[in-house]
Amino acid sequence: MKSIKTIEQLVEFMNHATVQEHPKMLRNIDIPKSIFDLHATSSEEGYTRNCLARTDDYELILICWSPGATTAVHNHSEQHCWMYQISGNLKEKRYSKPQGQLHLTRESELTQGQFTYMHDRMGFHSLTNVGATRAMSLHIYVAPIDQCQIYNPEKGTLETKVMAYDTATKTLI
Image 1 (tube, rainbow, N blue to C red):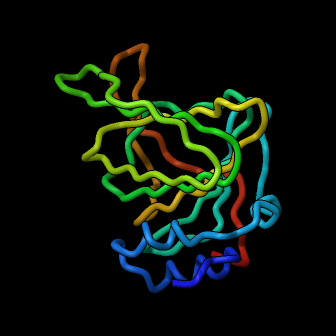
Image 2: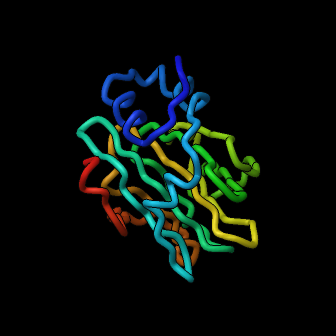
């Protein structure tokens, strides 16, 4: 497989790839950060979700993280999720939920060029930008996720969250 150098090439690959081919594709991403910068948005208080492409089979989301931004502990509605770290450092915490209580099972830090995979059978997770500057990550969901379950620590319960985009690239959708 040749390297993927543009978002358009990534979309073309996704339009024909099987789920089993996604990890190989991630290893071949060679898209300059400057291309992702064209689609990046920022928030002083958190993170932004920027849709680069969406079909019935997948969605590509560029997430831009301000320093210290973190997600709620959440699942992926039984969908496959690959995440490729474009810039910055994110800490991922994974949790199991036996008998209703969350238990931390793993912590890892993702740096530029690394990728990870998540699925509900692996539990729940949260992500945090642990760097002093903005971070960017590419999330590939197979199929698109319109809602997920987030953990409410005050109530100790799961709640449904409807997902939304901060921006959507109309030319690629």
